[in-house]
Amino acid sequence: MVLPAPLRSLQADLPACPRILLELQTLMRDDERALPEIAALIESDMALAAAVVRTVNSAMYGLLRRVETVGEALRYLGTREVVAISYASALRAAFPPSPRMNALWRTAGLSGLLMGRSAAALGVDPLQAHTAGLFARSGQALMLAHLGSAYEAMLEAFGSDAAALDAAETSAWGIGHAAYGSVLCASWGLAAPVVSFVRERVRPPTQRPPLEPMLRRLLALGAATEALLHEDGGPGSPAALAALSGLPASADLPEQALRAAVAPHWRQLGELRARGLQIID
Image (cartoon, rainbow, N blue to C red; front, side, top):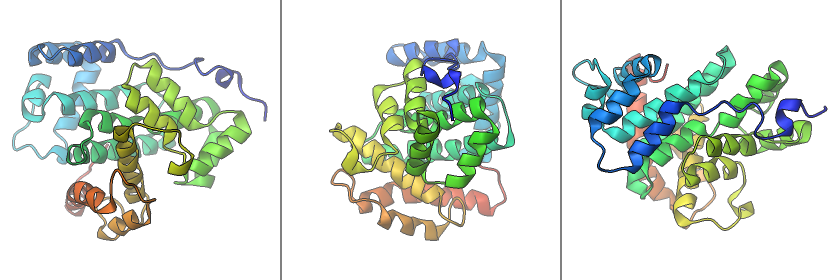
Protein backbone atom coordinates (compact mmCIF):
# COMPACT_ATOMS: atom_id res chain seq x y z
CA MET A 1 0.00 0.00 0.00
CA VAL A 2 1.26 3.47 -0.87
CA LEU A 3 2.02 5.58 2.18
CA PRO A 4 -0.90 8.02 2.61
CA ALA A 5 0.00 11.67 2.26
CA PRO A 6 -0.89 12.53 5.89
CA LEU A 7 1.71 10.02 7.10
CA ARG A 8 4.57 11.00 4.79
CA SER A 9 5.60 13.71 7.21
CA LEU A 10 5.25 13.02 10.91
CA GLN A 11 4.30 16.64 11.47
CA ALA A 12 1.42 16.53 8.97
CA ASP A 13 -2.12 16.76 10.29
CA LEU A 14 -1.18 16.36 13.94
CA PRO A 15 -3.86 17.91 16.12
CA ALA A 16 -2.55 21.08 17.69
CA CYS A 17 -2.02 21.08 21.42
CA PRO A 18 -4.89 23.01 23.00
CA ARG A 19 -3.81 26.41 24.31
CA ILE A 20 -5.16 25.49 27.74
CA LEU A 21 -2.72 22.59 28.05
CA LEU A 22 0.24 24.71 27.01
CA GLU A 23 -0.65 27.27 29.66
CA LEU A 24 -1.20 24.52 32.24
CA GLN A 25 2.30 23.22 31.55
CA THR A 26 3.67 26.70 32.26
CA LEU A 27 1.73 26.99 35.51
CA MET A 28 2.84 23.52 36.62
CA ARG A 29 6.48 24.52 36.20
CA ASP A 30 6.00 27.45 38.59
CA ASP A 31 5.65 26.12 42.13
CA GLU A 32 4.59 29.57 43.36
CA ARG A 33 1.39 29.59 41.32
CA ALA A 34 -1.77 29.37 43.41
CA LEU A 35 -4.52 26.85 42.79
CA PRO A 36 -7.02 29.59 41.84
CA GLU A 37 -4.93 30.44 38.76
CA ILE A 38 -5.00 26.84 37.57
CA ALA A 39 -8.73 26.60 38.29
CA ALA A 40 -9.43 29.83 36.42
CA LEU A 41 -7.45 28.62 33.41
CA ILE A 42 -9.32 25.31 33.16
CA GLU A 43 -12.67 27.03 33.73
CA SER A 44 -11.95 29.43 30.86
CA ASP A 45 -12.69 26.47 28.57
CA MET A 46 -16.28 25.50 29.37
CA ALA A 47 -16.14 22.11 27.67
CA LEU A 48 -12.91 21.14 29.41
CA ALA A 49 -14.14 22.37 32.79
CA ALA A 50 -17.36 20.37 32.41
CA ALA A 51 -15.40 17.25 31.48
CA VAL A 52 -13.11 17.65 34.50
CA VAL A 53 -16.00 18.11 36.94
CA ARG A 54 -17.90 15.17 35.42
CA THR A 55 -14.86 12.91 35.72
CA VAL A 56 -14.09 13.96 39.29
CA ASN A 57 -17.67 13.10 40.26
CA SER A 58 -17.39 9.61 38.75
CA ALA A 59 -17.26 6.44 40.83
CA MET A 60 -13.51 6.14 40.39
CA TYR A 61 -12.78 9.01 42.75
CA GLY A 62 -15.32 8.07 45.41
CA LEU A 63 -15.80 11.58 46.80
CA LEU A 64 -18.32 11.84 49.63
CA ARG A 65 -19.85 15.03 48.26
CA ARG A 66 -20.49 16.26 44.76
CA VAL A 67 -17.92 18.64 43.31
CA GLU A 68 -19.39 21.63 41.47
CA THR A 69 -16.31 23.56 40.32
CA VAL A 70 -12.77 22.96 39.12
CA GLY A 71 -11.51 24.78 42.22
CA GLU A 72 -13.25 22.23 44.44
CA ALA A 73 -11.78 19.41 42.36
CA LEU A 74 -8.29 20.83 42.88
CA ARG A 75 -8.81 21.05 46.64
CA TYR A 76 -10.09 17.49 46.93
CA LEU A 77 -7.82 15.69 44.47
CA GLY A 78 -4.77 17.91 44.09
CA THR A 79 -3.19 19.59 41.10
CA ARG A 80 -1.59 16.57 39.46
CA GLU A 81 -4.77 14.51 39.39
CA VAL A 82 -6.84 17.35 37.93
CA VAL A 83 -4.19 18.19 35.33
CA ALA A 84 -4.09 14.52 34.29
CA ILE A 85 -7.88 14.54 33.90
CA SER A 86 -7.54 17.71 31.79
CA TYR A 87 -5.04 15.98 29.51
CA ALA A 88 -7.34 12.98 29.12
CA SER A 89 -10.31 15.18 28.22
CA ALA A 90 -8.33 17.31 25.76
CA LEU A 91 -6.73 14.31 24.07
CA ARG A 92 -10.07 12.60 23.56
CA ALA A 93 -11.63 15.79 22.21
CA ALA A 94 -8.88 16.12 19.58
CA PHE A 95 -10.14 13.10 17.61
CA PRO A 96 -13.45 12.31 15.91
CA PRO A 97 -15.55 9.93 18.02
CA SER A 98 -16.40 6.43 16.85
CA PRO A 99 -17.09 3.14 18.66
CA ARG A 100 -13.52 1.94 18.04
CA MET A 101 -12.02 5.28 19.06
CA ASN A 102 -14.12 5.35 22.23
CA ALA A 103 -12.95 1.84 23.14
CA LEU A 104 -9.36 2.95 22.63
CA TRP A 105 -9.82 5.90 24.99
CA ARG A 106 -11.46 3.74 27.65
CA THR A 107 -8.41 1.47 27.69
CA ALA A 108 -6.08 4.48 27.65
CA GLY A 109 -7.99 6.02 30.55
CA LEU A 110 -7.68 2.85 32.63
CA SER A 111 -3.99 2.57 31.78
CA GLY A 112 -3.29 6.17 32.78
CA LEU A 113 -5.29 5.86 35.97
CA LEU A 114 -3.58 2.65 37.07
CA MET A 115 -0.10 3.88 36.17
CA GLY A 116 -0.60 7.25 37.85
CA ARG A 117 -1.86 5.76 41.09
CA SER A 118 0.85 3.10 41.24
CA ALA A 119 3.76 5.38 40.33
CA ALA A 120 4.71 6.98 43.65
CA ALA A 121 5.40 3.62 45.30
CA LEU A 122 7.93 2.91 42.55
CA GLY A 123 9.72 6.25 42.62
CA VAL A 124 8.08 7.40 39.37
CA ASP A 125 6.47 10.82 38.88
CA PRO A 126 2.69 10.21 39.10
CA LEU A 127 1.72 12.86 36.54
CA GLN A 128 4.25 11.58 34.03
CA ALA A 129 3.06 8.02 34.61
CA HIS A 130 -0.59 8.97 34.21
CA THR A 131 0.17 10.96 31.06
CA ALA A 132 2.29 8.13 29.62
CA GLY A 133 -0.58 5.70 30.02
CA LEU A 134 -3.03 8.12 28.44
CA PHE A 135 -0.85 8.84 25.41
CA ALA A 136 0.49 5.31 24.89
CA ARG A 137 -2.17 4.72 22.22
CA SER A 138 -2.19 8.23 20.75
CA GLY A 139 -0.43 6.98 17.62
CA GLN A 140 -3.18 4.39 17.17
CA ALA A 141 -5.75 7.18 17.44
CA LEU A 142 -3.91 9.18 14.77
CA MET A 143 -3.79 6.23 12.39
CA LEU A 144 -7.41 5.31 13.06
CA ALA A 145 -8.48 8.88 12.30
CA HIS A 146 -6.46 8.97 9.05
CA LEU A 147 -6.92 5.42 7.77
CA GLY A 148 -10.38 4.44 9.00
CA SER A 149 -11.61 0.92 8.34
CA ALA A 150 -8.28 -0.32 6.95
CA TYR A 151 -6.60 0.44 10.24
CA GLU A 152 -9.55 -0.76 12.30
CA ALA A 153 -9.16 -4.16 10.64
CA MET A 154 -5.49 -4.20 11.59
CA LEU A 155 -6.33 -3.37 15.21
CA GLU A 156 -8.77 -6.29 15.27
CA ALA A 157 -6.20 -8.63 13.74
CA PHE A 158 -3.43 -7.93 16.24
CA GLY A 159 -5.46 -7.37 19.39
CA SER A 160 -3.27 -6.51 22.37
CA ASP A 161 0.09 -7.36 20.76
CA ALA A 162 1.42 -3.81 20.44
CA ALA A 163 4.83 -4.89 19.13
CA ALA A 164 3.35 -7.01 16.32
CA LEU A 165 0.85 -4.25 15.53
CA ASP A 166 3.64 -1.68 15.29
CA ALA A 167 5.63 -3.95 12.95
CA ALA A 168 2.58 -4.53 10.73
CA GLU A 169 1.87 -0.78 10.59
CA THR A 170 5.45 -0.07 9.57
CA SER A 171 5.31 -2.74 6.87
CA ALA A 172 2.00 -1.48 5.48
CA TRP A 173 2.36 2.29 5.81
CA GLY A 174 5.98 3.05 6.56
CA ILE A 175 5.46 4.09 10.17
CA GLY A 176 4.25 2.50 13.39
CA HIS A 177 1.96 3.94 16.01
CA ALA A 178 4.76 4.18 18.58
CA ALA A 179 6.84 6.60 16.49
CA TYR A 180 3.77 8.52 15.34
CA GLY A 181 2.44 8.88 18.88
CA SER A 182 5.80 10.01 20.23
CA VAL A 183 5.85 12.84 17.68
CA LEU A 184 2.41 13.95 18.86
CA CYS A 185 3.63 13.89 22.47
CA ALA A 186 6.67 16.00 21.57
CA SER A 187 4.56 18.47 19.60
CA TRP A 188 2.26 18.86 22.61
CA GLY A 189 5.22 19.67 24.84
CA LEU A 190 4.93 16.61 27.07
CA ALA A 191 7.80 15.66 29.35
CA ALA A 192 10.73 13.88 27.70
CA PRO A 193 10.15 10.62 29.64
CA VAL A 194 6.57 10.49 28.31
CA VAL A 195 7.77 10.99 24.72
CA SER A 196 10.36 8.23 25.16
CA PHE A 197 7.87 5.91 26.85
CA VAL A 198 5.43 6.12 23.94
CA ARG A 199 8.26 5.45 21.45
CA GLU A 200 9.99 2.63 23.33
CA ARG A 201 7.09 0.71 24.87
CA VAL A 202 6.65 -1.58 21.85
CA ARG A 203 10.29 -2.72 21.89
CA PRO A 204 11.48 -5.67 23.99
CA PRO A 205 13.80 -4.47 26.78
CA THR A 206 16.79 -6.16 25.12
CA GLN A 207 16.27 -4.11 21.94
CA ARG A 208 16.05 -0.70 23.56
CA PRO A 209 18.91 1.81 23.61
CA PRO A 210 20.48 2.69 26.97
CA LEU A 211 17.83 4.43 29.05
CA GLU A 212 17.76 6.33 32.34
CA PRO A 213 16.71 4.20 35.36
CA MET A 214 13.55 6.25 35.91
CA LEU A 215 12.45 5.69 32.30
CA ARG A 216 13.13 1.96 32.65
CA ARG A 217 10.90 1.93 35.74
CA LEU A 218 8.21 3.83 33.85
CA LEU A 219 8.38 1.29 31.02
CA ALA A 220 8.22 -1.62 33.47
CA LEU A 221 5.15 -0.08 35.11
CA GLY A 222 3.58 0.37 31.68
CA ALA A 223 4.26 -3.26 30.77
CA ALA A 224 2.67 -4.43 34.03
CA THR A 225 -0.39 -2.29 33.42
CA GLU A 226 -0.78 -3.59 29.87
CA ALA A 227 -0.46 -7.18 31.08
CA LEU A 228 -3.26 -6.64 33.58
CA LEU A 229 -5.60 -4.83 31.21
CA HIS A 230 -5.38 -7.50 28.53
CA GLU A 231 -6.00 -10.52 30.74
CA ASP A 232 -9.41 -12.16 30.73
CA GLY A 233 -11.75 -11.17 33.53
CA GLY A 234 -11.63 -7.40 33.14
CA PRO A 235 -10.46 -4.71 35.57
CA GLY A 236 -9.90 -6.03 39.07
CA SER A 237 -9.68 -9.70 38.10
CA PRO A 238 -7.55 -11.47 40.78
CA ALA A 239 -6.35 -14.00 38.23
CA ALA A 240 -4.90 -11.21 36.09
CA LEU A 241 -2.24 -10.48 38.71
CA ALA A 242 -0.64 -13.78 37.75
CA ALA A 243 0.18 -12.19 34.38
CA LEU A 244 2.88 -10.13 36.09
CA SER A 245 4.92 -13.31 36.54
CA GLY A 246 5.31 -13.55 32.76
CA LEU A 247 6.91 -10.14 32.30
CA PRO A 248 10.61 -9.87 31.39
CA ALA A 249 12.81 -9.66 34.47
CA SER A 250 13.77 -6.10 35.41
CA ALA A 251 16.63 -5.19 37.71
CA ASP A 252 15.03 -1.77 38.19
CA LEU A 253 11.64 -3.10 39.29
CA PRO A 254 11.42 -6.68 40.57
CA GLU A 255 8.07 -8.40 40.13
CA GLN A 256 7.39 -8.21 43.87
CA ALA A 257 7.75 -4.41 43.88
CA LEU A 258 5.55 -4.04 40.81
CA ARG A 259 2.89 -6.30 42.27
CA ALA A 260 2.89 -4.44 45.61
CA ALA A 261 2.50 -1.08 43.85
CA VAL A 262 -0.17 -2.05 41.33
CA ALA A 263 -2.30 -4.67 43.11
CA PRO A 264 -4.17 -2.36 45.56
CA HIS A 265 -5.33 -0.06 42.76
CA TRP A 266 -6.19 -3.00 40.51
CA ARG A 267 -8.35 -4.46 43.27
CA GLN A 268 -10.07 -1.09 43.72
CA LEU A 269 -11.09 -1.21 40.06
CA GLY A 270 -12.52 -4.65 40.70
CA GLU A 271 -14.53 -3.44 43.69
CA LEU A 272 -16.08 -0.65 41.63
CA ARG A 273 -16.83 -3.06 38.81
CA ALA A 274 -18.45 -5.52 41.22
CA ARG A 275 -20.78 -2.75 42.40
CA GLY A 276 -21.84 -2.13 38.81
CA LEU A 277 -20.22 1.30 38.68
CA GLN A 278 -18.72 2.69 35.49
CA ILE A 279 -15.00 3.33 35.91
CA ILE A 280 -14.19 5.20 32.68
CA ASP A 281 -16.79 6.77 30.35
